[in-house]
Structure formats: C-alpha cells, structure tokens
Image (cartoon, rainbow, N blue to C red; front, side, top):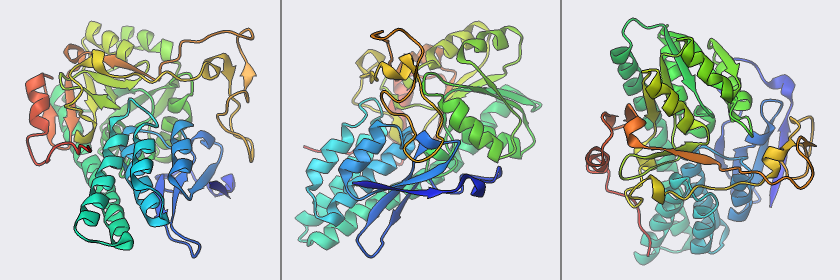
Length: 388
C-alpha cells in the first residue's frame, strides 16, 4: 500500500534542488518504508508517496511517479531491500520490479543487484535480518555510486562541450528530464548543463516540452528555474526551426538503454533530434552511467520499446490542483474523438552513427562503436548482474 504525505506548495522555493529528495529510505516505528517524490504532481505540488511493499513501488514506477533511468535502478534496489526487510518473497519482488518498465535497463540492474546481495548473504548462513541488511547495503551503495557518477559525468560532459565548442556561451537543447529528479546526484545530461551554468558558460538551455506527458515542461523547466538557469521552453515540433536559425550549439540527452552496438533508446522524440543535429552539423551527445549500457542487447532492433496507453495522447491531463490529481487514465480532457487509437511509444532508438559521443563516468566514447561500448564494461566494473 502507499500513502501520500503532502507538502504545501507555499514551501516550494525557486532555488536549488527539489525541497524533497526524489527517493529516500525511512524507518518509522511501524517498519521500514521507501519514500518517493511523486513526479506526476510536479510542478504544482511536492507530494511524497510512502511505499510499504514492492508492489506499491511497482505501481509508482508504472504511473511514472518514479522515473528516469538511474533513479529507477536505485528504486529497484531499494524495492528489493524493502521486500526483504518486510518479510516478503524477495525473488518475487525482484521479478515484479525488473519487469515494471521493460526498456529501462537500470531498473532490472538495481533489482537484481540487491537480490544477488540478499542471496549471497543467505547462502553464507545469514538469517533474515542480516540478509535484508545486505540488500539494503547494496541499494545504498548503488545510490552513492550514482551520485558520484553524476558529478563525474558532468565534468566529462562540460570538458567535451568546451573542446567541441570553444569559447563558452553554450546553447544546449535537451529532451525529457535528466536532472536530480532521475538520479542519486544532479542527473545526467541536465547535470552537464548545470555545471556549464555554474561555470558561466551556459548561454541558453532549450527545453523540449516532451509530449505527451510533458516531462520537459513540468520537470526540466522546474529544475532549471530552481537553479536560476537561463532556459526557454519549446514545443517538440519547434526544434527544427531552432536548428534552422542556428540557435542550437549542442543536443544533450540521457538514455534508458544503450545496446551493445551503441544504439540509444531514450524518450520518444530523441531520434528526430539526432537527425536534425546531423543535418545541421550540431553535436548530438548522450550522457548516461555505465549501468545504462546493456551488453546483452546486441543492437537497436533488439530493444523492447514500451508502448503506453492511448489516453496519454487522446486526453489532456490536468496539472495537479489538489489531493487525487495526477496522471491517471480517464482523468483528463478529451482532445480526440471518443474511441481514437493512439500510437504512443515511450521511447525511440537512435543508431550509433548519429551519436557524436556517449559520456559516462568512465569517460567519453567517440566515435560510438561496438568495440568502444564493450570497453565500458571492461574497466572498473565487474559486469552486469545475472540471476539464474
């Protein structure tokens, strides 16, 4: 089950990171819980969802209350730890969490990592409490690793921008949301733009509103405003006119899965930006942690793209106004005739030849090749966790 604790919008101040962290583990007297910021309620309200079991977290993930590749990995790990701490079936919880959103590889990675820690502890003779502690330790370790990776990616990304575009004054176009709301730190692509802003080298952040659920308008603009960045919101289909006018110096996006050949799955609308960037000779840069690379997915055609409900396209969902509001089926204003079917993929796939560089905490990969992708897992990482 999940309960909602509200923070008044009067407490939201337009500076810094969100007043409420995107995710946190808490241990009230009644037992451990996982508390997540409900991102469907932003920017109107900062509301927390309190998850007391893995199924509540699965529902939060499916409804996009919790979203963004790195954060999904962290959430998956904490969800398994929650199941262990509450005495539920750990393997069942891990399976449910891993399958909640099929395209986002980090989610399964985090869930399997905590599951592996739990299983190892049990195999070593640990009791339920110690094994649950091992799962929680794995989740906390992943959370801390992601925060460090975020800072490192920001540094690598800004260095790359300065190399490609000497002189500063960067005009960056971004898509969807890739900031602190999706990360244990300050994000992926957004963290690069934020670092450029703090260094006085960001001239303008162009924010795609990101239809149909407006993660750019609701979330990226929210984070940009809080950090005092110079930003402008645009409809997705206005991006071409910006390129044509010479107003874009670089495109920075995140990723939900990177295949072994370097194909990048990201929020739908990313691939058209890559095509525009190539035509207009603008760098197209992907910023993602190494955990987003999936060596078990050989190429872009092998990436399972999540198909979401038609109502997200055929209805205009009202922004949060009070308790009970959010992105829910049947809760919006119809913008298409009743019964209209909609094509609503959550992601699209950009081939590696359109990607200028992939920035990870391990460094910058350019050009993007299968050999280079394989090398990302050959460094300090032990490889992806596999569960039989």
